[in-house]
Length: 300
Ligand code: CP
Image 1 (cartoon, rainbow, N blue to C red):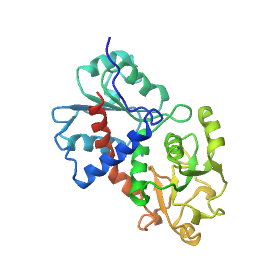
Image 2: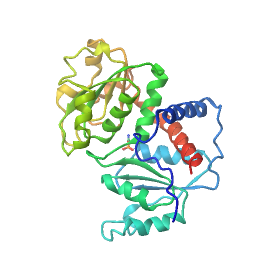
Image 3: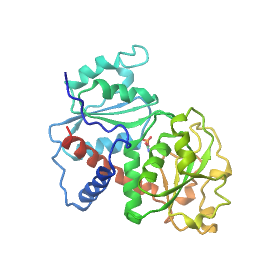
Image 4: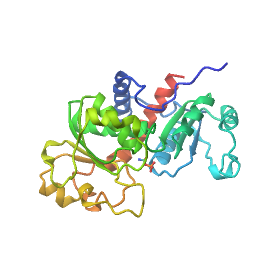
């Protein structure tokens, strides 16, 4: 009988005191108060990405290597996990147990990451699992919180979320922001998959609006866009589009976050404005990953 590792699968199971500690540790690493450059010396991370990623793959790998660890890269199509063989996850986990110390998993299926966490003896980091009911993106949300707190500290904020309520980032962020006492308003785009486990939460804890062009943007500290659609060819409707002209003309005075990648819902003319906090998110994600590895090492 093996003991279950402390993995990072969702933020709901992390107490707010631990979330606050995440923020402090990330800040300590950023300011040089905590040196973690050799903390993972001799340790190995296996990134298992069943779905594309730019930021999560590179930032997690870079963070691990800058902590002295090494990456054992895996191309899913070259393993027996591929669609031709579909090797049982339990069998692959038996292999992982003797090959590495940490595993980060992204999957278009909600359950696959949980299946790895069930069978693997090593800590699993959920790098985003699916869409709709059960899906989460915990590390992205810790990154978002870190950036927001760098701009505004820990005081209660008004946050406008835009995009699909079924998107894993929106789901995890909204729950955490609400737990922290922030007001969360939403301009939703169409929900394309079953999202039943969040329906009551959204109804009870968020205000819904239709059009970013008609609401008072001066009341918000943060506009968080998570994308309107997963379809690369879809053209977002104007009610969910952010442009420089819109934010300036509506006297918005806060920051814009976006988990990225973007389609046309986030105009590139925002990139060189003070509204842009999404590039800060991308850069600072490494700090939060370092912090996640520090947390998992301390808890395993
Ligand atoms: N924000 C995010 O998860 O980006 P990637 O899909 O590029 O990893």
